[in-house]
Image (cartoon, rainbow, N blue to C red; front, side, top):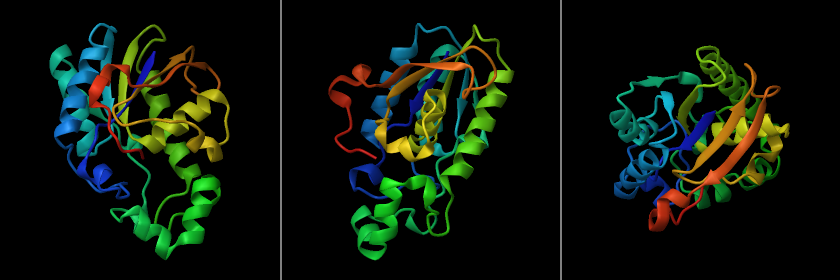
Length: 212
């Protein structure tokens, strides 16, 4: 089983700012969410932990790593979409300055290149490649945890469900949520079944009030 965990909350989420490759830390709620993720995964028999290189993901993985005595293995391909010129800007400013492009990205994201950033097809390719590398290192019976971001995790779930990348915003993947894909081979696209999407029950009253 691949357990897919989105990182916890940061102040950028609280203040409704776009967050791609900017390397920011979890806030207080995000750190508490990381502890609750670790508690939820405690008895799952996880044998390895992988993470995006960005700090917010590695911080979310740390409590589980410490509890299980497993090193967090960084994979570059798991990092967030490169948001280019939008990175760090308030969403209302992005809409004001690039309304048509932003609106198009929200409705058909696979067909729009973010100014100075990545196409979703490029993100999908690198995320699937990173995940295939992880699967190659483990038997199908082994459970592993992958800590990543909203974009990459939505794309993985779409791939497993056979959905086009334009459908990514049809899937909720909240901050500090847990999803899961059961893999029967080395390909998420061809040898997998989605078992869980966006589980936040472990967060209780510590759910984020923001979405993104």
